Structure formats: structure tokens, C-alpha cells
Image 1 (cartoon, rainbow, N blue to C red):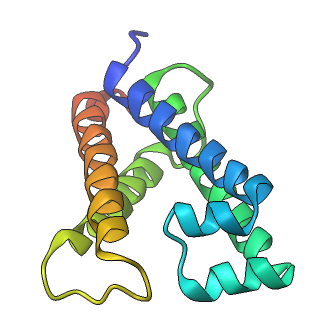
Image 2: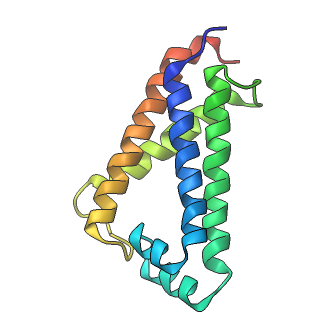
Length: 141
């Protein structure tokens, strides 16, 4: 089987995002603030609440799972169950999240800079997934 470079890159981007979330946990409240966490999450981290690291760890775990699915679709690791469905859903989530680029959507306690930058990043990741998924569609179970 030929390696799907688009899905390999998409998986690497999701894996990098997972690692970044783990780094935020290790970096503490200043890192939560720097990386654009909501004020509520920053305050929870400052209080030493378990909510901040647990929610960030959950996001990292989901991103890690998404990376595994992209790597599976790329042919880098064995086939995971429901591969086509999962890659379609993952792609859709990234692209829907990118809609935050649209003016008028609420910032949900985040800065405009964070919303713009993170939306552009997930748009690139979503489009990379979409191109990879489209090019691999016939070969996916």
C-alpha cells in the first residue's frame, strides 16, 4: 500500500497539537494564558484545580486519537475500526471549528488574536485532512 502523505501530515499536525496541550499542563497557568485558554480555565489552573489539567489532558487524548486515525488512513499504522467514518468526522470537526473565523461568532472568553490564529491553524489541519481523505477514499475500508 502506498503512503498517503496528506494524511501523514494531518496526523503529525494532530500529534503536535496533542503534545502542545500536554506542554501547557506542564507549563502551568502562564502557559494556559499564553496559549489562549479562557479566563475561567486560567483561573482554575491558578487555583490548582484538577479541572484545568484534566480537561486539557482530555483534549490531548482526543487529538492523539485523531492523529492515530490519520496515521492509519495514511497507511503508517494498522487499520483502525470505522476508519472512513472516523476520518470523515474528524475532518468535519476541524472544518466546523475553523468557522470561528467568521465575524460575529462569540469569542467565548478568548482574545480575538487567539480565535483568529487557532481558527487558521485548524482550517489548515482540516483542509489537509480533507485532501488526504479525498485522495484515500477508495482505499479506505
